[in-house]
Length: 253
Image (cartoon, rainbow, N blue to C red):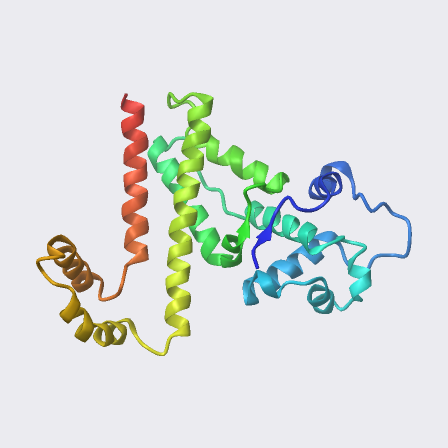
C-alpha cells in the first residue's frame, strides 16, 4: 500500500515538524515522557530502513522503544503524521557539501549524487508519495541547498525551480529503477546469466531479424555489454550527464 505525505492534520503536523522553532504542540502537561519525538521518529526510520515502510506501525515503533502503544499516540496521532516526520527527518540528514567556488555544473552534479546516495540509504522513501511534501525544516533546507547550486548563473526564479525539479525527478526515477533491479535479483533463484539463457531458445525463434532489425542489433549489443537485462548504474551516469548537458545548453540560449 502506498503511503502519502500531507495526509495528516495540517496545522498539528506543521507545528510538530517545526517544534524546535514553535515549541512542542503537545505541551508539558501530563506524566513525564519516556522518549522524545526525535527518538520516536528515529526508531520508525530505523524500522523502515530494515524492513520497509509497510512494516512501520505505531505498535512496532512503540515496541522498539519499550513503551506502550497508546503512549506512542501522545507523540504522534497517526501513521500518516509519523510518515511526514520521517520523510522530513531523513531529508534533513542528507549530507550537504557544495563548495560555492566550484562551477555550477559541478555543484548541481554533487547535489544530485548526494540525493542518489540518500535513496540508496533509505530505499523506503521512494515508496512514499510526496507530491504533497511535509514542509518542515528538512525539506525546506534541502530546497534552499539545491537552489544554491544554481544561484546566480543566469536562470530566472521559475527556471531555477524547474531545474531543481528536473534533476530531483531524474535521480528519484533512476534510483527507483536501480533498487527494483536489486530487489529482483535478491528475490530470484536465477542469476542474470541464467535468466538470459532460459529466455534465449524461444526468443531466437520469435525475434525475426526482418521484423526487429534495429532492436535486434541494439538489444544484442546492450545485452553483450551489460550481461544483464539492463544496467541501472550506467543509465544513471549517462542520464545525469545528459540532464546537465541540457541545462548547460539551455543556459547557452
